[in-house]
Image (tube, rainbow, N blue to C red; front, side):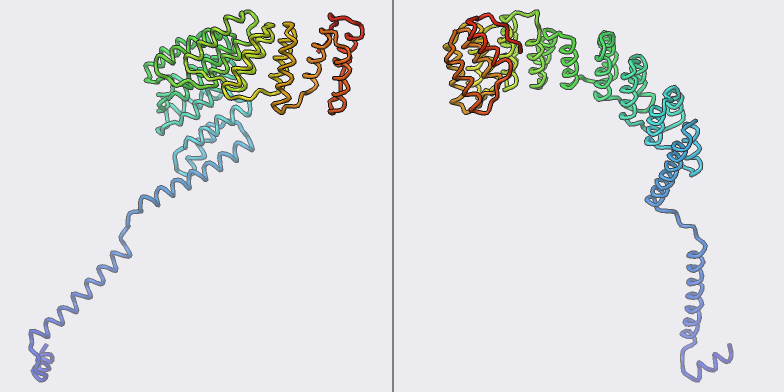
Length: 398
């Protein structure tokens, strides 16, 4: 200290300044040492994104181990699931349970599904995706296990899953595959109201398809009225399906079907080309030549160009009704529209000539068919044979 003081006197530096520099240097050294100690010894918290990434990676490894176990020995898959994820210190995922359920179904071990569901219900915390339950409902539906399908649907909240109209539609579709299931549907709908699930247009479409499948088109029309009164949008495919079912009914009279068609139109139905074809086919089946000709005219007024099949059916109907003049007009109109008659068209026209005893016209038509590249078949020659024999009651096989 004395030497320092003497040195300060010799260099004329104030003592206070000297002490200041010495104390500053010592303080700076202690601060640097303290920061170095913190950097080397302190345990910094891991960022959240790193923790999530690590958990996701662990779950992927666990899933790979589960897949390997399932491929080598698909037995006790539930235990394999729990052990695989415990090995990597992570929680099972919804995909892991979905994989186990699908594997059980694929390997004919569906009797173990109930234990998997019980474990999922009691020991897991995640929200179960609705798609898992939908797959199970479809599986039980294929096996006609309707009560198990219903049980899974109403157990959805126990799996921390909020059921929507998707799972309800799946259950309805399953139940509607058989008549005994269709009888359970009203009870299911009443209970589903307590789950705050509202029927949508897709739900009604399932009902309409089921009613048409069981040949109940009138009930389907009643359902359409309900949809119309409650401002539901009605899919055009539902209209078309009901019309097709009506036209396929053998126990309905022509007037009744046409009346129901007008009722559908009031609900907003607009016939397309296929619908008009079904109507014409129904009228031809009922031997309504005039009505089928009128339907052809309405089809054109709606902006649809009839095809060869429609013209052939109408021509067949008017020939059956004995209106040969209209048959000629239909045939000529088809040619004017640029349509090429097929073998069925020529055969129908040949039958008309047979009924009119026009032998020369029949020979000319047969020659024209060969020139146009439409080779006559057995029906064509049978019709010509009827002309030669002078019979109008020949049986001509289709």
